[in-house]
Length: 489
Image (cartoon, rainbow, N blue to C red):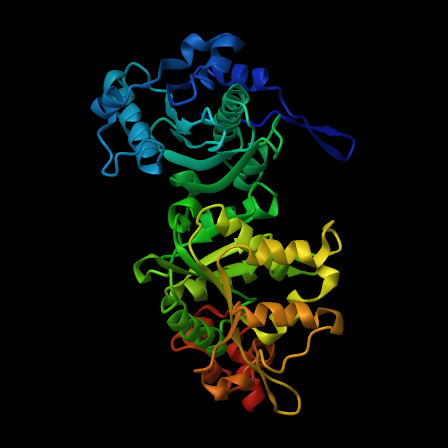
């Protein structure tokens, strides 16, 4: 079966892209005689399938539409979850697999040789009556592009931003149509497919904070890069990757945790970064109100640090993420410019004590008023947001040009900020990391990067064990063994 994209037309030398209406998208699916499948929707009504019913011509497309709302009935169909929850990725995947299996068993291939089967599912919790919990959900599709081909799968996690259950239901229905349409007609360009999920939707209505592609049509898709697109396109503020390098749902890993965050470019990660992490972590878990088994370390890279000549260098992103993950770290990519926004983000998932580990230069920047001119309350508003939570800054020293070690005791902030800095220092919000390896203070990632790209030797000793080998093996950050040979000759 060949699926063609008819939404693109040529006008002279220009390519014109039309955005079909939701009705037109549903109708186009319905009128394709080979697309056939089921809809299983839990928690927000049958919001997606109703668009296909209303569009007309659905009898040849919709095999079944169901909503197993009752928990006991849902468990009887899909099996109970170990944690007793229903709005989870595990539940979504069980729904997709179960419905595909039923379709395969009930429709014989010899009678329908050209059919491509699909199962669309969602499990959603809309806003509660008290309007304290805005709601979220998992949405996905498992589908074929060719009759004898293995199934592809697209799953995503959404967070509602609207404050009305009916509006959230409508938003979910539109998203579902966009996903099914994109799965069949945009699968050859996943980045575009991602953007088209917001057709007829606004980013103020919906946040997509996790997405994963799998199957033969997405064999070459790197889900971490797709997550980067979520941040790049403004679909979410941050995405996270676990030590195994795979996407993880921020809410699942940050919930009620004691979080220690380290921000940096990590280009590449050096012994300084790891020393800062190790020493600050030792201090963090000794803090009151910090439970070691609930402590989570997050290495954060802001989107601004991923830009190269105004555009995001995706290869550069991959290099950094892979190195940090190889060291067993959890990585977060965000679009937060200011530290207080990072703290606000974490605070939406946890009220437990948090820590920020940073170098002296970063702390001096925090006390620079120019970063807060867009706030009506200026730097005081920013600091209120930064420190009103149970937060401490663990400060890693630096060596200035004269060789003097700069700590919280002798760093220089703008004269107007002196008293403000003293206030936070006096109240124990800024603590020096004392137990460091002073030899690391002469290591700077920008110098390491220059040495790598120029083919110079000696940079290997400035990086954590194993990192230099990965850089050489994968030729990261401009490493070229030929350049090194030429330099030596």
